[in-house]
Length: 509
Ligand SMILES: Cc1cc2nc3c(=O)[nH]c(=O)nc-3n(C[C@H](O)[C@H](O)[C@H](O)COP(=O)(O)OP(=O)(O)OC[C@H]3O[C@@H](n4cnc5c(N)ncnc54)[C@H](O)[C@@H]3O)c2cc1C
Image (tube, rainbow, N blue to C red; front, side):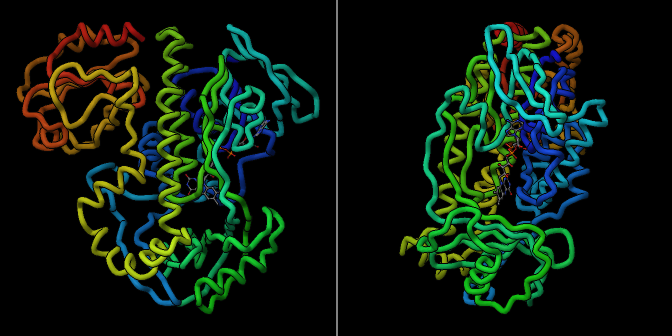
């Protein structure tokens, strides 16, 4: 079998890469040693940036239909509610999806898989990558197929979306350094009969442990995530469910009736990232490249964005629109992001679970009483939402980012901010899988010539008036242009209308 891209692993990262390659018209083979998409709830927090990406391929609404919006959080200590934070429309005005969506990974993966099948492709299930070799022209893989026979699949590129233990990463000799948390985490999907209403995330403020109940779709259905104390010295898989239930009841100090345990698991959390996201013609994405604590619901969303970043670059190379050098920017952009992510999730985890005396006092005695007021402040929302939702990720230091002329609040390398033009989302104009040249001006001058001159297969053209909203967001009163990359990050921004600069940018690719 021969193809352009072989994707190893059909978890959320691999499936979303397949969806993007379909969007760009790239031939691929995707395989997984599992029999089917996961039946479990696993990663449940879907961030705004992921929904923005899915909107481009018509999947955002499908996911929203299957999930619930996390509307508020209650802080509980000593069996009593001590504070409440509303965050339904937390990021209002910053994204068309100003919330965290709660949807089980099983349903999420199924939506991606259905998209793949609706586009005439399929996953090779029960098919395991055994080994591979690569040279300057391609990658040759040996896989064990569903009948137990070894087959050869050749591809121009390989993307390893094969999870935290990534056999591909090992074979490439890449490092995966970091640390492992001593404490054992547990996760359980259950039904709970208790005195609190089902419309909120419940965070238990404990001296030295993490414990949170996430409301899921379905009557009394909750996801529980927690940690055992440090002195509980057992390994992953050695713990009985009864020990977990006992710990939950002790920590909540509540009389809980827990039934219908759909799934439970224990694990050690790691904080690690790979030293390089690629080696030759092989790339790593998702948990294969970075793992961290579940604080902030970031892992799966980051894997989906790795895929989104890599897909357009692979597509441009395979369509002969860019030199292979562009593929180096995948490591340049996503390694820096992974490093930041690990620092942020570690800090967040310490804030919610560290046994440090000061932090513990703040968490149990101060935070519950100030949280409601603090989170209602616009400034806090504007600081927290972009980080949690991942819309604030930028590639300002990337070699693909060029600030040409003018001083804007928004820089090259930023995600295209969200705003409306004539009552419609700007993103409605940005669905095509290509570069977009946008001109913003105070006058309805006819820019058609400009549009005609730049219009190529890989660029489309759009004009909008400088509305007060656009002026405020970009920090300018005057005409400017933006060249947006196919992943809707700003490649070039300039106060001069210069087609030469735009053409140079594209030619350099
Ligand atoms: C309790 C918990 C809660 C979490 N909650 C969230 C959350 O709310 N939001 C969030 O963003 N993240 C969350 N995460 C993290 C998230 O689950 C992971 O980041 C995500 O599943 C990684 O997806 P992936 O596709 O990269 O890897 P995986 O889902 O691990 O998929 C890898 C796939 O590769 C396959 N594979 C491996 N080796 C081979 C081989 N040799 N041949 C063929 N196939 C192979 C495997 O079978 C597997 O299907 C959570 C994690 C945990 C443990």
